Amino acid sequence: MALNLEERLVTSRPGSLAWYQRAQRSIAGAIGHDARYVTPFTTYIERAEGAYKWDVDGNRYLDYQVGNGALLLGHAHPAVVEAVVKAAPLGLHFGNDHPLQVQWAEQIQQLVPCAELVRFTNSGTESNMLACRLARAYTGRGKILRFEGHFHGWHDDLVRGFLPPFQASPSIGVAPGALDATVMVPANDLSSVERALANDKDLAAVILEPSGASWCTVPLVPGFLQGLRDLTIRFGVLLIFDEVITGFRWAPGGAQQRFGVVPDLSTHAKIVAGGMPGAAVCGKAEIMDLLRITGDSQHDRYQRVLHYGTFNANPISAAAGLVTLKIAQSGEPQRQADAMAERLRSGLDQILARRGVAGYAYGESSTFHIYLEKPSGRKVKDREALRSIDANILKGMPGELVRALQNGFRARGVELMSYNGGMTSAAHTEAMVDETVVIFDDLVAAMVATGLVATLS
Ligand code: PLP
Image (tube, rainbow, N blue to C red; front, side, top):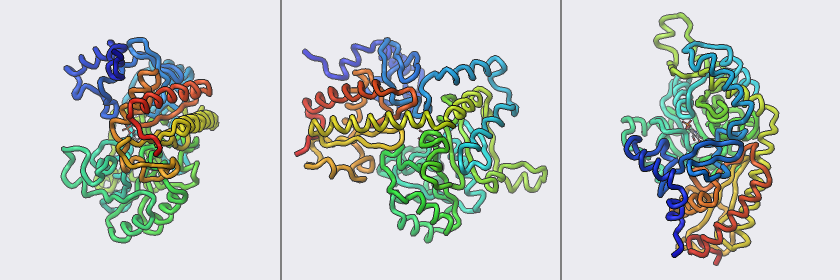
């Protein structure tokens, strides 16, 4: 009897399964990141190079997860590895300032339009915490306006709002009062933003992913970013771009460069540290100067923003980040990654069209998303009718379809991000993309045959 997909995964990946079972006894929740959760077990990876990674059972994957988006240049890029190997014997962590951190900050200043000054942190979550604190300190107000579906890390300040139902906290254990410190509105609706800013005089800043929620799963309408810039200036609140994904990917200077809208602050992680842990907040000098210790005891004790962090700007991350950003400066890696994603989106979309599936592929820059309807959902005659904002994450693509896509690709040697899409890197080639499209054709055929996905009525 033919094995089903999950049974096939179990049989062909005994090593991953054994590690996953062992992790149940030592790692809380058995996984290292909520988004790594996938049933029946997670994949245990042994090594990675370029656009590929290999699991502990020797299976090769064409990788569209690219280190959670951190690897614009692909895995183990020789220049980045060389920089790390050169830096490591000199000391893994000094607990002091060091020349590489200044060069790293200067490189970021050159690329990121709003980066009059830079401060290093360790993750996107930390960067967004610091940006919120800076915004509250600068304006003397307490709340942040955010958008439904946009993700800004797992900290209490901005935790509510990225998972539907958006008003409910996605976690228990959030500090009392934290949920009331954000105001949430739907994206793409400037009049809601205007109303919120007019009604609530305690708003310090507006924060968003300038790609639209979850790296453009819900794209922004043209003009929205400029509209936000105009409104925030009019109401005297700060505009923060969370460029944790878009930074150095959407363009060498991130989304702010690509769209020509310069925020007051932007937060960066992932690519900024070249695949090592590391992150940054960039911003206008007047705001960033709140971090300065002046020697005036009154000022230093009561009028500045406090920020610690043992591993801030550690030398290994600085080395990897610096060389990565130098390579990214030319725009060539972004052009290659964008072109591969465009080719992939178009190839995937053609498969869905040819097989008459109620779904479509879309995305921006070097990302792609696959949207599919489940058979018991609404009847759709026309794929174009589906291409509306309400058809995607705000409604939520059913979990069983995301899982079927992920596991279907996984069994065929392709890894997606932990959702219904992925990202390309400069290491992805046309041949790899074309191979992915052929694999997708086979996967879609299987999904149609098993009645998992809706076809056009
Ligand atoms: N902001 C965005 C847009 C992200 O995609 C992420 C992580 O994926 C974060 C913030 C949080 O970053 P980190 O995982 O480094 O804490």
